[in-house]
Amino acid sequence: MKRLLSIALAAIALLTFFTPPALAADVANGAKVFATNCAACHMGGKNVVNAAKTLQKAALEQYEMASIDAIKTQVTKGKNAMPAFAGRLSSEQIEDVSAYVLDKADKGW
Image (cartoon, rainbow, N blue to C red; front, side, top):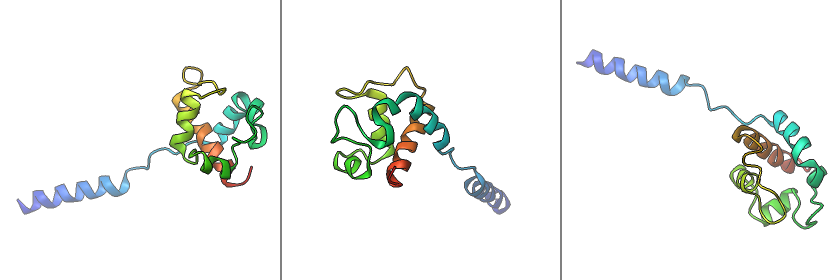
């Protein structure tokens, strides 16, 4: 019984410590998605439709958009003048472009 318990605990430890992490978003792919789908309105982190609501870090924080989940929701569902990209972009592309936007905002565009 002790041996079986030891084997089970060893197996759990191996699975816990050696499981590869979830794949992170691909920021390089996000840059391509952004260039193709977003740059017309958001070149350089700006906003040609509403100048106050840029993709700059301070604006993202002010409008509670400074997270991957908030950006993904905005890209997926759209809001006001921004169209929804669900159906046009895959969930992976939305994840990637959201990570790209947040990364660029953190770096000051």
